Image 1 (tube, rainbow, N blue to C red):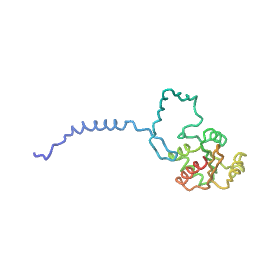
Image 2 (image 1 turned 135 degrees about the vertical axis):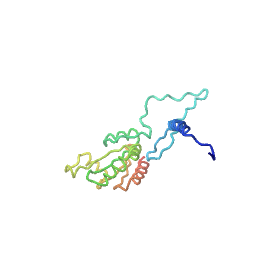
Image 3 (image 1 turned 90 degrees about the vertical axis):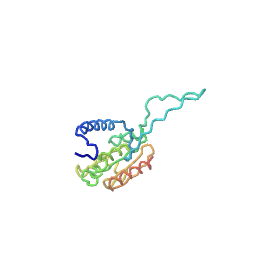
Image 4 (image 1 turned 120 degrees about the horizontal axis):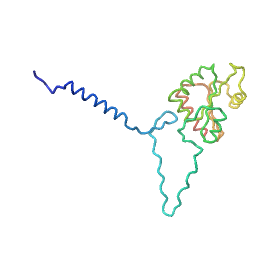
Amino acid sequence: MSSNGPAISAWWVLVLLPLGAVAGLVVGNMPVPERAADPFGIARVAEPAPVPKPPAPGEAPPPAETGAKDEPASDQPSSWTSFSAAMEESQRTGKPVLMDFNAEWCPPCQRLKREVFDDWSLGPAVQVAVIPVSIVDRVREEGRNTDEVQDLQRRYSVDAFPTLVVTSARTGRSVQTRGYGGPQATMGWISQAVKSVR
């Protein structure tokens, strides 16, 4: 019997397969650098916190921090909340408020909710960028809106659904858009709106 090269025995395969699986598990469980998500879905490697320099000889040390800051880290998501709670948080933190004026009977409103706010990647990005508030028009279902919804619709001249308004309690600036042009257009608009109200 002639052989052109070394034959691999079935026993070697049985020995090497478990070793390969163990090596795969070890490599797969290696630590990965921590990633921080950009408010609009672009992941970046988180940079380490800067180490403060010790004071020079004869120089006074910097004052110690006395408690938590009012402003949370910019990458902290905000929960969907009421208008008044959102404005309080915006005043305290400087983070803009996003008001989603919508109605249950409105198909574009439902698409916006499903494709952006409830999307597994875009929804959290919205909550990092803004403090979100859903303002639901109930005229068709109940014959009227609450006083707060009527006041907000009047204040922001809402006459179509969906209407998105981004505002800042600190600066008093606000911008708005009407309709739904898809997920990417909406995320782009929110990004620009956040910059313009700060």
